[in-house]
Length: 148
Image 1 (cartoon, one colour):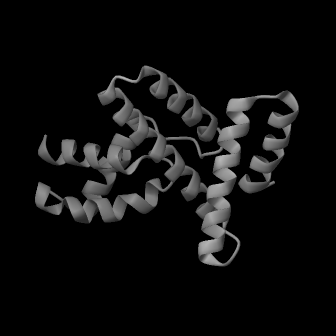
Image 2 (cartoon, one colour):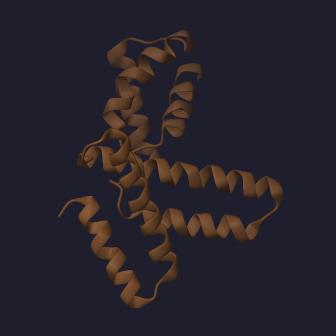
């Protein structure tokens, strides 16, 4: 069963269980996937579905950031709950130690020694962590290791 089918099946289960949060989040995710399919004019591959879900998580993280600045703890809690639902459909995220090891290996592989070569490192590492780490976290780790 692919991710899209799992989302649809879980939506039906959430409707039966009257789980409003899960139902709302899954409907939004499926709508985003459908919109992406309409834009592409074809079915999305499994990797593309995961990308759409990652985009949804990123949007909620941005919402959390904005809500914290505005002092809206209710919106922060809601967005965090939505992220928790969405993350169950994403690949297992890399731990900080795993990410650091991967970044160190890529830096050595590329032969980067300074911040000027950050772009080279990022272009080499992003395909390796696709779907398993946030680009912002990867960028911060590369910056940390190249400067420190």
